[in-house]
Image 1 (cartoon, rainbow, N blue to C red):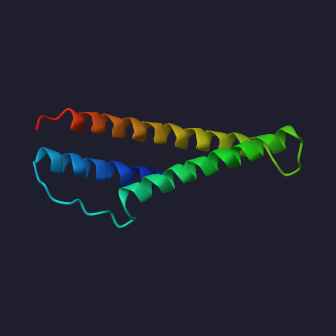
Image 2 (cartoon, rainbow, N blue to C red):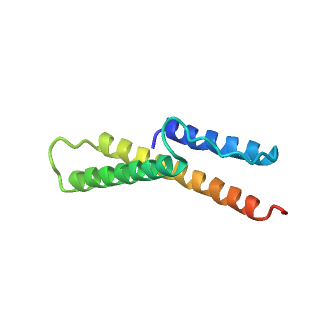
Length: 106
């Protein structure tokens, strides 16, 4: 998952929070990249593919396949771990925002 996608998700969350604080009841416009659901789904798919790619490289290195360097395996593993951690942070922020909205007085 790229930092651009995470930035888009976080920017959209900030806009929604600002709208909630201003008590506006307008329909949020989806970002140029698509709907929030689509951006989130695409991000999850990319993180999953990064983890699968890292797993394939690890297995190939363990089996001694030619052309797979330890450095490539470690880089892929670190990238997938970082992307996963970022996705968990986004999920945590979404859950926190949901709880805040759920606990708002009507």
